[in-house]
Image 1 (tube, rainbow, N blue to C red):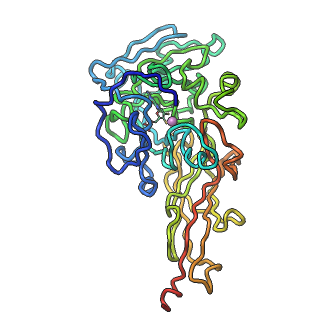
Image 2 (cartoon, rainbow, N blue to C red):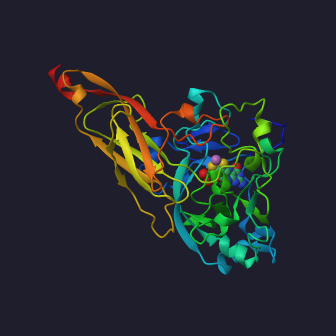
Image 3 (cartoon, helix red, strand yellow):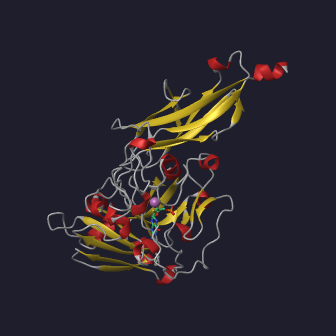
Length: 397
Ligand SMILES: Nc1nc2c(c(=O)[nH]1)N[C@H]1C(S)=C(S)[C@@H](COP(=O)(O)O)O[C@H]1N2
Ligand SMILES: [Mo]
């Protein structure tokens, strides 16, 4: 990561769950323990992963104002009360997943730059706020034919080292922003309480079905534009470069490589942990999620490294009141017998999972086939190596 001696202070950060796995201290990047993550469908707010690029701004709700400008007939400045009172309140359940989820595993194949993440840089919350669409209609946003193609967001967190100290920014398409079924919110509540500072108090974008990077926190301004956000995080980062792109030639590929929007199909085994030693019976627990509101139709489990498969049991809510499938599903698979274990005192096995969505997308087998310089969108088969001990052998000892 490029550091340009940006002078920022991390003295006024919020307090955080001591149980977090901290991947980077300042800016703060942390994920919950993977076994804790799958204990419930809705992640408790204090366990929700945190991905910051700069110090957390300390914003007072009373003096906060959201600006809406650009290709609109009626530019707006809205207070938090305006946002709460002028527009219908909508509540949806949605997962947010960082495009860097599972980056560490990509780095194990071949080193990538970026904050290392395990398998828990995603979480699920109940979000309440108004529809971005309602605000843009109120602002009389221009149509596609009039050149309004992107909704550009700026945060109030100044000091991102990658972007010369500018605030964090990102954009989504107006097609997604204005889609009646798109469920893009300007959220002020998370799990029934005002947003916490780490998650964007007082207002953030929740753009479900697309990479977390577009759900801009501490939202300062929405600009309707003919162009994507000019932010580093839209133009240079959060892109899947082909595997010949390296730090010497990357500049040639910045413009040619599309910026990420919809997430791909993903799943991971959270329990048991890698290198566990277990007795039969035991249960595998994990999550699966897809992008674009596509439904996770099935999760396959293999006990032999991906030679043969069976279906896991899917649990958790369906789409609820949302227009599409924005939330993960949790899955379980219980193993009571292992034929290989007969006449042995133990057996090493590789558990593997892979999910399928409603467009029949599934996960690629090998991380090497999707390796990319920034280590984004690693959705290769997830595997966990464990040792199973034979109970009857133990009993005879
Ligand atoms: N203003 C601002 N918004 C932001 C970020 C940020 O650093 N600043 N990080 C983005 C990224 S990369 C992700 S993955 C999500 C993380 O949201 P969370 O911290 O609430 O989990 O916020 C996004 N929105
Ligand atoms: Mo992210």
